[in-house]
Image (cartoon, rainbow, N blue to C red; front, side, top):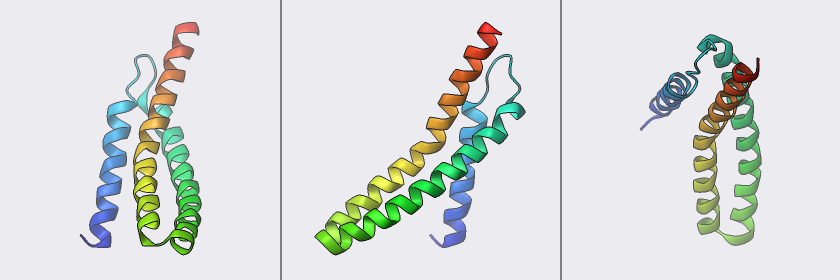
Length: 100
């Protein structure tokens, strides 16, 4: 898979999660989509930088196997980040509509 295919897969993942998880009764999806996208992008950027440094540290300290484990953990964390923010925003939106 080339880099364009990876980019398309990432964008499709974000789009599917955004549509599926941000549907909250009483709150328009547009109101949460921008917040979700910004939080997801910033979080993934920060996680990438941290795991980049950690993976290189593991590579030089313990070798290829440890670095590979670090990369796998980074991919799992970055894949879970959009889901995490969607669930947080969904919960907050439901709480604010119930008490508002």
